[in-house]
Length: 296
Image 1: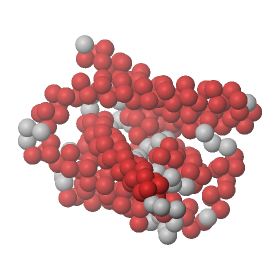
Image 2: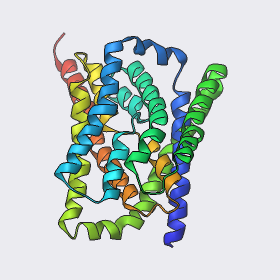
Image 3: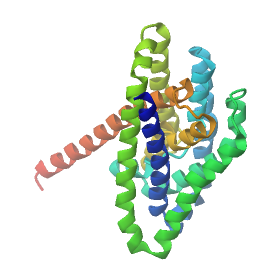
């Protein structure tokens, strides 16, 4: 049974990676990509937030909460993985700057693909990680689907509009399978972790990292509310896809503490970001109701 769950989870991970990147490419046009990048100050702040401040914050958490090498590697791996595919959708739901969200997501994803093979050997030193394999997997499973999606959108926009909902459906379904399969596998492990103080430290790290990363993005997003919100969600909701590519390229067995930390951060970030998005939407609905009740 554990072997079947691992196989199912591994397959779901690969499906999620490819379909989420394909959906990103299908959502992006060349104009969407180029226009917001003309704001150099915002681009520089976005790069600093995602690739400098957030990773430094992760190192601070490791210093405050000493954990095993594998758990620390999982946290640092997530911290350098920028460009969450869900950022444009969150921007749409929260009425953020969608054009900025789209261009930021693609830029961060491409930089993550470039930087990961360079940085990962230092993060996962002594763990038998193959940088060439990581680079190959990042290109094949992330960059290539993005380019295919962009090409299809620009050459056959009507077909792209038909493929996009299917890609999003499969991507959402596969992330559900990932949580189900690995949730069952790690349940006993997590119960054991919470049996001693170290388990609560892992949960605390996941929560503090997510909240801290959100605040970093918010305060570095500049004066415009639409930019602040987008950068906050971009820094707070990391590119788990890239982290999963590295893990699957480095381990034949996903039953390890590196993956456990990534899974825990993913779980808490989904909960926290979803709650914030829900609050923003509710406030917008309440404001709309209030304006309709006011006499004209």
